Length: 274
View 1 (cartoon, rainbow, N blue to C red):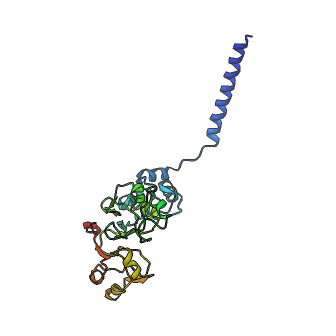
View 2 (tube, helix red, strand yellow):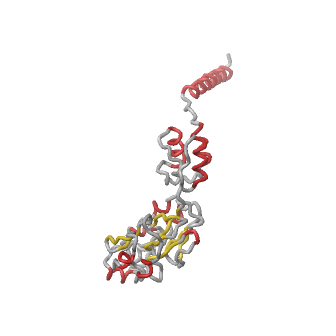
View 3 (tube, rainbow, N blue to C red):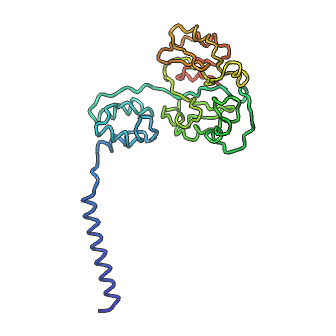
């Protein structure tokens, strides 16, 4: 037999045997398809933000299908519509997703906040934060280099005069901006309720805060005394509002000497314009 013909026969035989082996392996080692999980994942928005508490949309879909959770209202970006669709697939009662939007608790823009240095490194909040807390005197406020802008999948965040601002119409409460902010000054607020918000996170004493930012909370306690619903507390010289208790009456904003408390109606987009 010619060597070439023999080689062709051997290679062909090896190919056939290998193909047969792969075919058998694909059957034996096949991963069972979770049809419910696939159907759920198809209706999820695909943001993979992790706001649901699971490892992205596939993780949430798998958890629902396996019965690890029965809460259909964990997807903030999907809202109530997605919650109802999931409930239909799983035969569960649809949970209610409370509409909310992210807000940056800072007014330390280029006009209000003073600077301690001129930063010329990588334009990243995370990187700049490692250098004395950033270029601004206030080490608690928004650095303004836009890490939150980069991760937002809905084009809801823009840098305005050195501070990040969020458009509540575009925001889907995915929490990506919250997770990436090195200052931890972004939080969710109810979307269809009028609430007061302290747009400051400075924890220095009042005299020091005044020198750092013209719109920083000095912990004077006036807002606490004015609030009739007990929604405001002052910790580490900075006021904090419990949105569940806040009625949006505006009395705290009226007495705030630093004008760092705003009455915010995200539905009407009346958050402070800088």
